[in-house]
Image 1 (cartoon, one colour):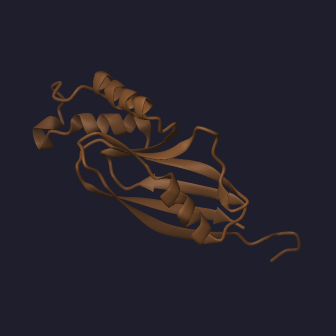
Image 2: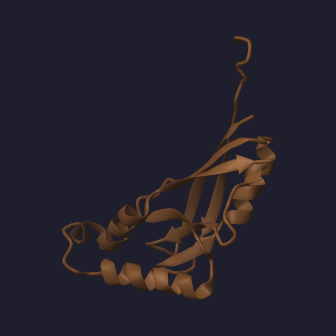
Length: 143
């Protein structure tokens, strides 16, 4: 390796999430923090990715009223059973469209071996077609 170039480590781990409702927001911050600690990375990034096309990962405040607002707004923006083409296959087009709006992953800085999140920020898994067992991939890269 050239002088001044440091090797980065890459750590990957899976989180398993079990949702209880069709649409549900679940705070996974503590589980992601644990994976960052396990990685041994002090400075870098953590990437949290959902393998599922009917689920999402976001960063926001986990306040109960806001979580209900998120669910209600998603239902308002993309109502279930609104005549979507995909519903003729498995009746969950609304979940796919909602996931498209929210996104399948987030990337969060890591400093001093911990997630760099604002005062009110948390990592939230958004179930859009539950209840189901789901998987998230946490990738931590850094030194």
